[in-house]
Every structure is written in structure tokens, then in C-alpha cells.
Image 1 (tube, rainbow, N blue to C red):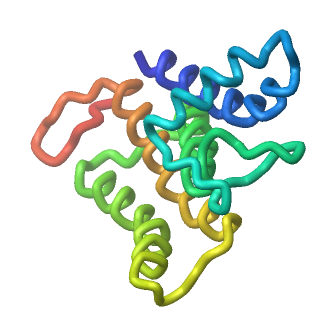
Image 2 (image 1 turned 90 degrees about the vertical axis):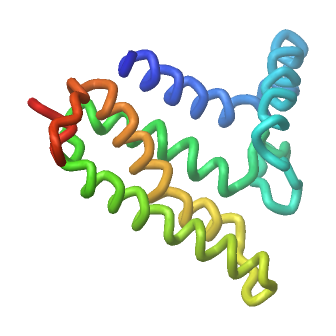
Length: 153
């Protein structure tokens, strides 16, 4: 299951990067359109908040791009590095990793400070990478709850 999740995350990361190019090729335009339709279910796809590749808006916004690309990287990295051994450490990691995304979101929502697409994507990287790392790690390692220990290897 861990390998499947890792493959899915990596494939999705590639798909969101090549979808803009796919729209301009008659042989792949249908597939590209399908990607944008699927992505519209999980992202607002606002033009001003999205990166463009070759002059074409990506199927997800900058923040989602950072989350998905970093999530795929985190899922791949866990195959070479173990996740923290205690449930407290994984929860703390995810909480701390979410702070940059939460801060940029809140500051924009409150009208205190606008952020560029690059800043939104960069702020999402810690959360995406940590989530990918922890979720695949939980699947990859025998996740038996034993008091405060969730990984017994």
C-alpha cells in the first residue's frame, strides 16, 4: 500500500506539471481537460493564484502545487529515511509544518498581508513534504500502536 501511495503521489505531481502542455496537443487535449476537471474538485483554480507553464495556467493553485510536489517528494524520501518513532513526534512535526501555510492563509484572509504565488507555494512545502513522509511511513512500517510507540521496527 505504501508503494501505491508513493507512486500515486509521484504520478499526480508529474500530471499537474504536464497538464498545461497536454492541452495544446490534439492527441492529449482530452486527457489534459480531464486533469483540470478533476483538479477543480480539490482546488479553486483561481488564475491570479496559479502558476503558468508555457503561458497556460496549471490545474491547481500555487499553494496546492507546493503541497502536491512536496508531498510526492516526502513520500519518496521516506523510502530512504525513517519517520519519527513516537506519535507525539509525528503530530508535532505535522503541526509545526502546517504553520507557514496557516500563517500565509490567515494573513491573506484577514487582509493583513498579500503573498505572491511563490511565497504561497514555498509556505506549503513543509506541510506537503511532512505529510507525504509521515503517511507513507505509517503504511510502510508496521504501524502497531504500542503505548507511545507506533513504529516497532
